[in-house]
Amino acid sequence: MEKKKFLVVFIFILTLVLASCGNRESKEIIGIEPGAGVMQATNKALEEYENLADWKLIESSSAAMASELEKAIKKEKPIVVTGWSPHWKFAKFDLKFLDDPKGIYGEAESIETFARKGLKDDLPGAYTVLDNFYWEASDMEEVMVAIHDGADPEEAAEKWIENNSDKVAKWVEGAEKGNGEKVTLVYVAWDTEIASTHVIGKVLENHGYDVVLRQLDAGPMFTAIANGDADAMVAAWLPLTHASYLEEYGSQMESLGVNLEGAKTGLVVPSYMDVNSIEDLK
Ligand code: PBE
Image (cartoon, rainbow, N blue to C red):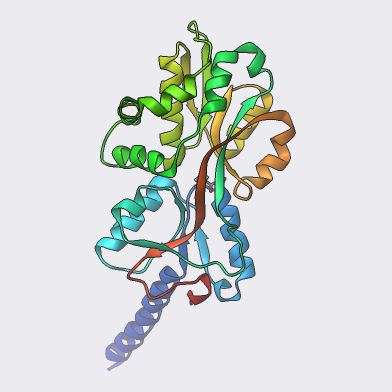
């Protein structure tokens, strides 16, 4: 008798624990690298949207976030991730950005190029190529999808350059050829920046420079340019996503302007989920 009672109580408690686990799981936002602007914005969203009061943002990596998303979609399970566009995930899965009535994630973002001070005088040819670098979201997406489908980033960049010689010709127009001088580009392992940095890196290499690509976290990427430890990066999302980095390091870097328009960040869910706004998350 005693044993039976114990068993009943045990099962009851187990049910409670499992239920609360399930509950907790559904109140998680799968994030990426802690230094990303979309993570700062999501922390702000957790504070400002009352319905997110008991939600948690999970730090992760861009690659791990994408694989969690893929796993959930295979089982048609609910999932909320910190997302951004352009990104291959929109070509591969049926996804939607949640409406953001409080405007925490801002409107459309641009991606901008920054160089260290003095690059223009030291390597005017490389500076001109970086300054001319501009492409469309669809171009970047093409490279990202190729990489996701298994191509090496360098290979995917080469292929895109081959197929878009008209665009590339405009970037190198009027740029003095390099003579094996070293150019260091820094970037973060975000899918967007892996694509862009490998493309512009290859273009500079084809133009006579000895290009080194160095992968860093977001903060160190900005400090490397500000300190002059690296020559340039094509990875600043503005006006909002990297606003805090710009405030800190903007005066120590040289802005070369926008290289892509119409980017966006926010909370992303599979289309089969019955939510359309951040305010619908319960
Ligand atoms: N991202 C991709 C970055 C910028 C590029 C949106 C993940 C971020 O949130 O900082």
